Image (tube, rainbow, N blue to C red):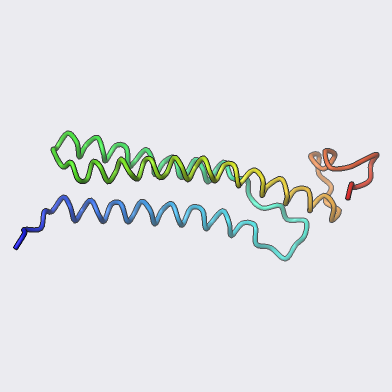
Length: 128
């Protein structure tokens, strides 16, 4: 029977915690868009991407420490988390900007008075 390696268990727990953090970060961003108020535009994506970048930095540091200590399995796992986080951040940036633009446009059409609503108006009236 194979022995359980302590670093392998801790590596799995660390990956699970980091992925859970990513899910919670982006669920929090998605929850900011749920509102019954048509004038609510939600939060921009950039602070949430910065929080995800913190997860990537923690994973990169853990990968370097694991590689130095000779725990190659943990190092590879953390490297995979870094790559996954970067891909998620890039995708969230693209999707988030589009969603933010749509919410701003619909809020301006609903009657929101804001400086950036001028981009969505034609001669002072909201464009359809």
